[in-house]
Each structure stands twice: as structure tokens, then as C-alpha cells.
Length: 318
Image 1 (cartoon, rainbow, N blue to C red):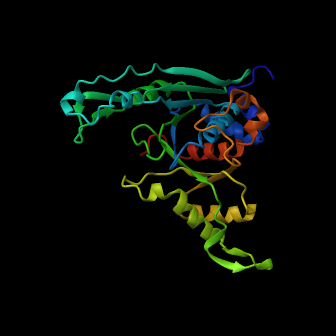
Image 2 (image 1 turned 180 degrees about the vertical axis):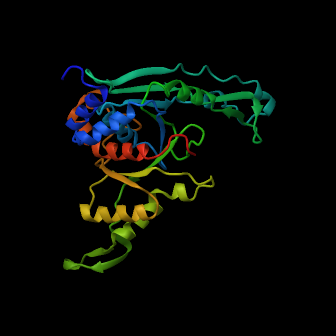
Image 3 (image 1 turned 45 degrees about the horizontal axis):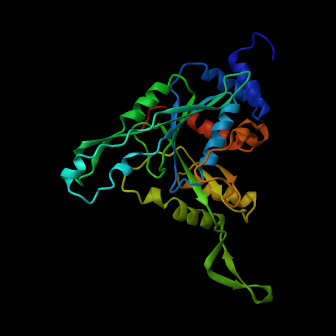
């Protein structure tokens, strides 16, 4: 690498190796040289068991392009094991002390040998439960000050902070500056299962759906938790799809689905083909995969589009 090269140029050169245009990467890197608050990103999904892999891969793609990325993970809550006497009287429950919370842990998942690219995983408790303060239902009151403190401590050290909660269906208005929906597809709706047409050989086949009809079915199946939520509306910065099976349609069909999603206010950021649930439940990619440029390159297109969406959104809006 040439000596006396600016940090922005080094970052742009590394990004160009992953397929990004050097001039665009340089312009973005030069603007990122200016001090700015990082985005705190929260992914939203109805269920998250098979999505940790995708989120970890996107974070790794950012790190390989020269960004400093923190995966801020919520530790398992120890309180439920101490409240097994929930059927007893309130006076008895008030005397129960919570178990000692787990100590925070920090590990380096990947670090660039010649640049700023970095992927760190930090796991800690996100909330405190107060046994002496009960809610209207007689349960301990909680506050999320530990998460707020962890975010505040990390903002000066990272380019993006990715929140990895235990449950992904609710937005985080207090700490997140951006929200992206991840839709998980088990069976792609390219035909109407309620009506059938006769086919050759006597078999029946479903009536084909248009891309717009397919998009409507996907919103009903995979995004109902958003539209049916009693919470206030949340501003979304994009939409990513993960299919757990082979897609029975071509790229033109998916482009039509994306156009309809965009019309509905869901900015499409890409499609990820996971196969038939090959990934360990709630597990990030293995360290060897995070080091593999070929593995990371598969997720670079989605990572770049998501990064562009974040760059276009002001930090700090609700």
C-alpha cells in the first residue's frame, strides 16, 4: 500500500476490492472522516431464531469495508429463574432477590490486519429489575439504563452500533436511531393456494400471482406484527428479505415485488437466500466464515445498500 495515503483513500481502496466503485467509496470515506455520531441500528422481525446469521454477515461485510462495527447483544435475563414462586403472595415475592446478573463480555470477531475495519461483540444486561418496585400487575418494574449507558460508552469508538436483542419484534425508540425490517420467508407466495387450475396429466396447480399480489401476501404473512402493533408508528429505513427455501421466481419478478414494497413505504434493500434453515439457531457466523472474503462478499450488496440508507437518514431522529 502506498505510503502517506490518507485514511479515506485506504478505506476506499479496501472497499473497491469488494466490488464497490472506488470514487464512490472515497467520497463516502472522506465524508466519514468528519466526526459524526454513529447510527444505532435495530433490526425488526416477528421471530429472530434464523436471522442472527444474516445480521452477523452484514456486520462483517461492513467491517471488511473498513468500518468499525459493534454488535451490542442482550444477555440472557437471570430474573425469571428467581421468580419461580410467581404464584405465591406478593409479600413472599418481594423478599426474593434476583440472581447475580452475568458479567459483560467482549470479544473481537474480526479485525483488519492493515486498516480500521473491526467487528466487536459485546454482551451485557440491557435492563435492571427492581424487586421492591412493583408494576400494576405485581411484577418488578424495570428500567433500561444499562443499555443506554452501553450505547453512550460506544458512540465515540464505532461507525455503527447494531443492537442484537433477545426479541426483535418491538422497536427501541429510546436508543435506536434507525430501524430496518427483516422478513423471513418459508414458502414464497407465487401462486394462490386457494384456487387451482387443471394442468397436464390431471394434476392441479395454483393460479399464478402477479408480483404486486405476491408483495401483498408477503406483507400480510411476514409483516403483520408491524401493521397490527398497538404502538405508535415507527419510521423504517429499509426492508430485507431472507428466504429459507429456493425462490421459484426470477429476478424480474422480484424486482416487481420490490417496486410494490417501495410503493407501500418499505424501502427494499435486498434478498438473501439462506437455503432450508442450515444455520444454528440464534447463532452468528463462525469466526472462520467472518475471515473468509468469499463468504463476506455474498452479503456486500445488501450491506452497501443498507449503509447508503443509513447515511441518508439523520442520526437522532425519532
